Amino acid sequence: MRDRPIRQHRDSGWYEVRIEGHLDSRWAAWFDALSLTKESDGTTVFRTQVADQAALYGLLQKVRDIGLPLLSVAQVEAGKPGPTTKPQS
Image 1 (tube, one colour):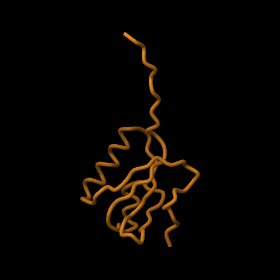
Image 2: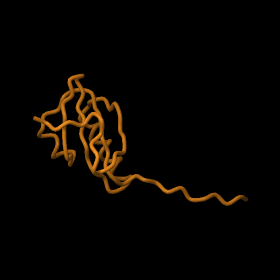
Image 3: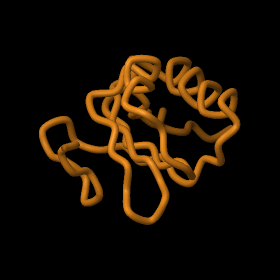
């Protein structure tokens, strides 16, 4: 049997999540989000930090539980805002 190297998973860290529909800013606390931005295309983007894969799955379950379609999930660097993240006015 051939030995395979163990692949390092980068599940912990900062994630940017895009969902269909606009959420009020009060949802930011429920998602433990650093920012919650309503985009002009009818989507909401929020940034949050997760500790591990279980926490990421928990976050995705919350998205499912509110009944809005999940459009994307991307891991992002902590100090750099993603291309769609803008300060909420």
